[in-house]
Amino acid sequence: MSEESMTTPQYPIGSGFGHGSTASDVVAGLDRHGKTAIVTGGYSGLGLETVRALSSAGARVTVPARRPEHAKEVLDAAGLAKVTVEGLDLSDQQAVKDFAARFLESNPTLDILINNAAIMASPEQRVGPGWESQFATNHLGHFTLLNTLWPALAAAGSARVVSLSSTGHKLSPIRFEDLNFENGYDKWKAYGQAKTANALFAVELDRLGRSSGVRAFAVHPGGIMTELQRYLPREEMVAAGWMDDAGNVREGFKTPEQGAATSTWAATSPALAGMGGVYCEDCDIAKPTDPASPLARYQGVDAHAVDPEAATKLWAVSAEMTGVNAFA
Image 1: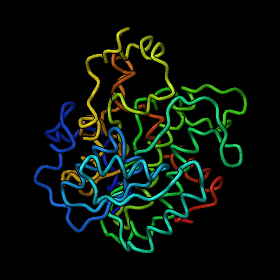
Image 2: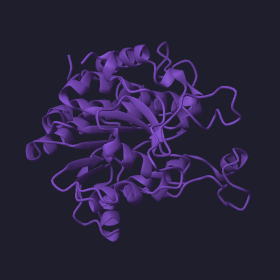
Image 3: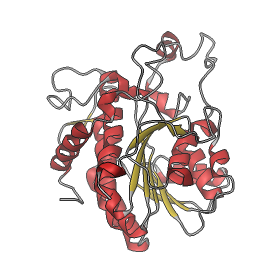
């Protein structure tokens, strides 16, 4: 089969699920016993609900966490004591490699990798060799994680990788000329670039990995109030229209259970067999953004976030920055 014929159209497939579906809805009736999964950030917000859904379907789940003791307490309190917790700081490249090495020692295969953890609109911070922290954490950390875990994903035979993007991708394409915002920092453009990177990561990984049976999807989980907003003062969220002055979240925002649905669907749905490299929202493949729509800022995927040439270039740049590339 030619590479072109394996390309999945960026168009809805009529999944039967939607905006109000929950993670438990999309795994109902699915059996994932014997399957292994990793969910970064799987101890808060929609990550926790993703772990709950995968565990309920029988998967063995590992949650890498920057604060493993705290993560273990949260998971135990949620009735998820069987979930394995390991230390991992995505902003620390060596910590990512160390986690992957530990995982590979005891897990020959990995069926599901969900790159869920993220920071959003943070104050300017530099990590590693001076990398901008949102790009370094949200993208480069997960890039190195994927590439160091690659042997287990390839060995699974039909693994799926889910990269959490968001409509934040609409705020900025990849700024190849100034990835690290050395010429002036803008927290929202930096977040936008990182979310575009998460989407392009799935595009290129799917191209590189599908001959090994590994398919990748980018996901917009929807608007959800979680710890992701920890850097935002209430005044800013009110000004953005996310909530009113009393702190009531506006209609249309999802619960964490609903927010976890699309990533869980992309990781498990039989309807996606043989597909990949697409951006999903509301438990279906998203349409390309309609620039004329009044909802263009909130629905669909912009062309720059699914551009195969930009995806290939970003992969090469990321491999050069991190010194890691399973496909070299």
